[in-house]
Image 1 (cartoon, rainbow, N blue to C red):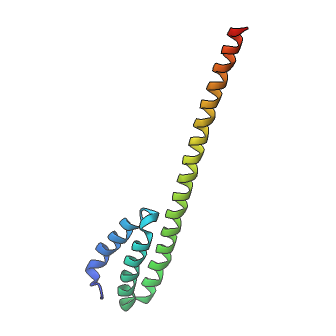
Image 2 (cartoon, rainbow, N blue to C red; image 1 turned 45 degrees about the horizontal axis):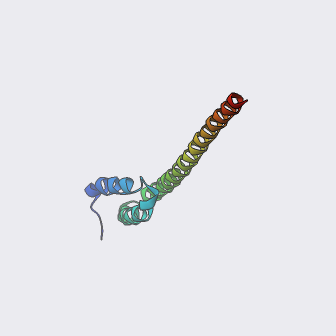
Image 3 (cartoon, rainbow, N blue to C red; image 1 turned 90 degrees about the vertical axis):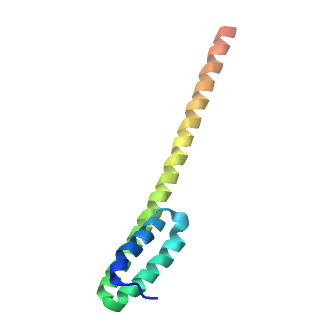
Length: 99
């Protein structure tokens, strides 16, 4: 199936929407491969450039997802530490009051 030139932009928008989350990357790659096949017939150089940009986009999305998960873990750890410190202070105050 070849995609007419005027539909390349629409097809690329669909690919980009699918690439927003790591879970839909397989579908995004399949969508992009169809687009790339259509572009190759008219301009192999442009297809090569699009492919390089696409690969960088996918890597950037995965890296962003990884760092977002790391940030969430750090946030939870900090929250747990603050909760533990609060409990320790309360326990210390109770011990002082019991004396």
